[in-house]
Every structure is written in structure tokens, then in C-alpha cells.
Image (cartoon, rainbow over all chains, first blue to last red; front, side, top):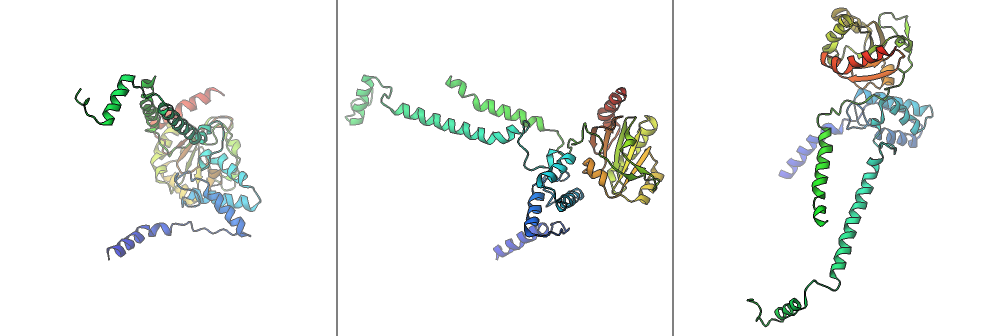
Length: 160
Length: 178
């Protein structure tokens, strides 16, 4: 009972989002072209709503951008040309995948740097623990003798 | 040496704090225009007041102008309108209006009722020039120098404070360059 109520509530909660698809329809000659268009507009960011791509956004500016992408595509432009034309107008911001250049180098390199630092730390810990385990435990001969007496369990040394 | 290594987490935390702190107070909705330092895009659009008169980007040549993007559908444009009239009348600033995705009749009624701060009004019902400028929300105001180069974009309402802090220094600077 409670479960079905929960499910119904969830459905109600998500209902509005399911119908939020943009209503304009574009015609394509082939399925591949349509897929290409969809992939392209999914990678472009809406300058107005910021955390949506232009495929999902209902903002008028996103509609204009989809329209422009469609027009350019129909007249045979490549993906790079379309993205370039939009970047020229709205700035690098519209790319969800920024290009690798001097300004974005750190952005792209940070994951690699973090992994390398992590590996170095792990390697350091492993090497150090190996070295410590080999041979010398840092006890003097007298201490060693005492330790073995305790371990043997005659108990005579416990109190001292 | 070992003791120094113990400070690494503190140093990292402080560095992260500095980076995050630098982001506080920045409005993520304000984007740098991609056109800064570039000429106003080419356009062929009619005058709002005179259907038969074609305008193009040559109208920006010769003096520093503000290009104000507005529409009667935009509440914030109503908000800044009085300040634009003040700028045009009291400060003698040349403001070019870009009536964006709007209806001519509504726009003319608006200017008639509220006053017309624009020396030239471009009529762009389909938003072509707006799109080429990268307008993503009205009102937007651009500072354009006497060569027709875009120097600054302000997204949002222009009021006295924005004028004094952001726009006036630029207008002054580019006026001196003529």
C-alpha cells in the first residue's frame, strides 16, 4: 500500500519534467543526420539557463540556436563550423567540452595530475613499508632478548 | 622534514579556500561577450520609425555610442528606460536602440508614452542582429567606439550606479581616442 502511494507520488513529482521536451520538430533526410543533430545540440550549452544544453532548454535563445544549427546543417556545414559560429557569437561558454588550449590546459590536466600524485603517494607508502619490514626492527640486542623472554612467557620480566 | 609534510593538508585546504573565496560574489549569469574587440556584426535592418529606411553598421562610425537592446515584452527594459532617457538628455550620450523580437506598433507606443532616448532605432523583429551579437536576454547594453568596435557589454538594467562604475569610464576613454 505505502509503496504504491510512494510510486504514485514519484510519478506526479516527475510528470512535469517528462513533458518539458522542446516542441519544435525538424525534418531530416536520414536517421544518421537526425542523430548527428541531436548529438550536436546536446553538447551546446544554453547561455541563458546555463545548466541546460540547448536540446533540453525551452529558452527562446536556445530555440534560436537550434534553428541556426539546423539551418547550417541543412546547407552542409560541418559540426566544427556550426559550433564555431555559435562560439563566435556567444563565447566559449556554450561548449560543454572546452577545447584544449593554454587557458583550459589546467582544466584538462587536473585529473591526470591528481591520479599521478595519488599513484606517487601510494608508491611511496608501499616502498617505505617494504623497507621498514626488511631485517632491522630497531631493537638493541638487550631489548631483543627481553622481548623474546616475554614472548616465551616465563613472566619474570613483566613487572620491571 | 616529516613534520613539514604534515602541513601539506593545511596548505591544500587554504589554497582551496582562496580559490573558492575568489568566486564568491561573482554573478555567474553575466558572461563576457564574445564580440569584445570585434566590430559590430554586419546587418541590414529597417529603421523602427521609418520602414523604408535601411540601416547598417556604418551608423556606429564617427562617435562613441551605446547600443541598447530592448523590447516591450521585457519588464526590466521598462525599469531602465527612465535612466536611458536621463543619459540621453542630461549626459548627451548617443544611444542606439535595438528593438529586439518585438512588434513595431507596440514599440512606437512605448517610445511615445515613455520618451525616446534613442538617436537611431533599429527594428529587429526576428532577432537576427540580436543573435549575431550574442544577446541572450534583454536588456543588454553595449559600448561601441567610434570605429564601430564593441568594447563592453552590460547584461541587465543600466542605472546610475552601473553608468558611473562600468560605462562612463569606458565612454570617456574611447571618446578621448578619437
